[in-house]
View 1 (spheres, rainbow, N blue to C red):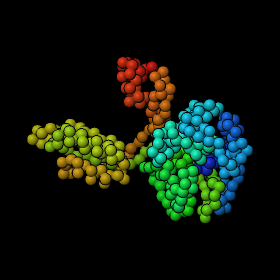
View 2: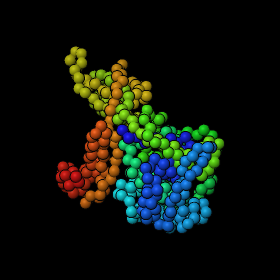
View 3: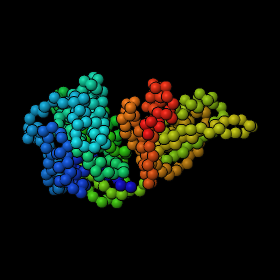
View 4: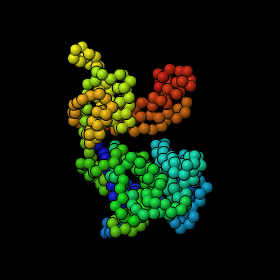
Length: 386
């Protein structure tokens, strides 16, 4: 499997991620010509060599109207979500790149909306909405399309420490929007002073990375270094590896117990709690027990590292006095979600691929809503969409 691994030991920013992936590209100058020809208003993107702590890499330089970020106050006429998506929608790039770039901006808008307590439509991106950030995000999305990794993994994210000055004043690191975007993603602070992970970097990682973990066993074919502008005691870079790993497999725990003295409602309640706690799957099987009693076998599938948590939950929320645990190897297809435009509006489509197989189907809830609204059957809507 073609795998991209992103090492975030010095955080992540849009320009650093773009620069790192550019080093993996077979034709970086050709890519830059395509990016500059995409039609981002007034923007020019160049790549220049950069050395941090003796390590050579690439720095991406974005100029807007001939001036680099920090040299002038950016024009914020297109800093709303609507304005930014309008720009993206009219770029000379593929539909997939447009969808990815717009999705990244939606993540940022949702984070800003949550932090500031205002509707998404009222969000103005400040630094994030500037045209240089549009270039970083679109560049990253184009590179992901052209490099075409089958799976994207990333390390836990170093966020830095201290405070950062922004349009709203002085804020703690990670900035509130960054912290929101990194929810449920492993992050840490090893006391390096400064903002290491920006909202743009966090949104790009959240959108593209399927899992955050240590580096897997992989045969590395190429390594890229994307350099930041600031100097620290460590090399300020994002490092990326592209190579081959085995198709997706991981270790799961199968927890099983037999129940004959719980009501169906109580069993369903326990199932719901297990799902909410992050179980991979929970299901029941009807069984016959001693003395002819009818019962159910409750099975909970979870990540192997989480088995203790789910054993505790099962003992707490069921009447069982014991359970069995089997450790299994699980093979999975890689899953992703996209949106397609139909005569009824946008419909989400789930796609799974791997092991030489590709499967896709529309999101049930979207199809069901269209069926209810049109008084058509589910099958009619699915056939029309496909």
